Image (cartoon, rainbow, N blue to C red; front, top):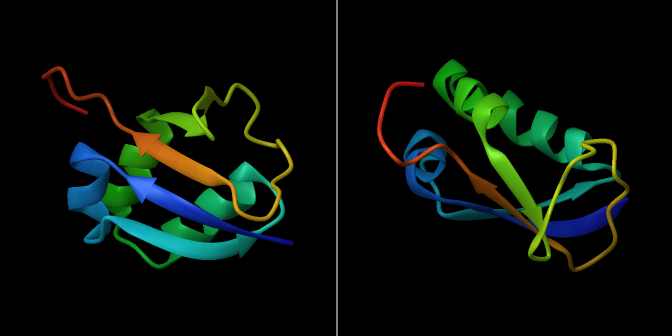
Length: 83
C-alpha cells in the first residue's frame, strides 16, 4: 500500500466536496474505488468520465501500481456540456 494525495479539479471537486484527500491504495483503480465509496453517486459518475494524471503523466492504465508520495489528479470534462 502506498500513501498518495488525490487532488480533485472543477466538477470533481464540487462532487467530492473537498479539494484533496490523502489515502492508502495499491493501484489507481483501488484509490478511485476508495474515494468513490465515501462519496455520492454523482461523484462516481464524474470519476468514470475524468482524465487522470499521476505525477503529471496521463494515466492510461487504471491498474497502475502506486508509490508513496505520488499525486493523483482527477480532471473531469470541463469545457461545457453535460456529463
